[in-house]
Image (cartoon, rainbow, N blue to C red):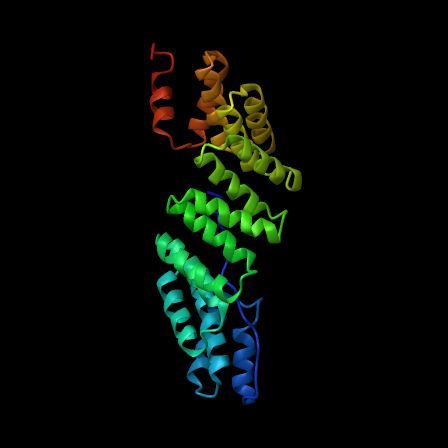
Length: 278
């Protein structure tokens, strides 16, 4: 799946806003909400603001949200989820906290729990494209590919050139054996982002399924021209050639993929037997 910022997942959202509090508390709130602050500074200043006892319920909810975001960025997902829970109890109308909590649940491997949270976020803000994409990615992880495709299509109805939605809908199409749709979606990604090596490699896979091996070869070749360290494309191009009876051409690609550390059992066994009659 698309690397997510997550599988192509979205980042946690910070909310801003201050109110009539003392200068010291106001300073901590401002620093709790600063987008250019370090993670540790956010945690410290949000915590001081929360413990001041001088915040309104809405301000305290935002402080918990922002501290949760800092914990998320620190990959302390259980702490992020805890803070989003505190924020929810103070202000359950904050749609972003549900999407944020969903992001953390995805990172913790709870795709079904994440889907429920994305649904809550979209119930409060039906136009949230990032929540639609996040929900689709979680549905992919849950092997609910048809629903995932629908979620990405919903996102594209709002933002037609969103490359994450296009790319991940292409992945869903591949898993649904809709190779032509996958080619269309990955082609749309390439039109917007012509250096996207993953889009070339995945479109090549769709071409393979359609039996268009020359086009597949061209796309794998373009991927490695853009990024010579992209082991997946070296592996797939080499295997395509071997499977087509052109082992003499494919062996170099497979050796390159192996040297780059591509993790595939077939590749490891093949490389071991190269030149030994295997």
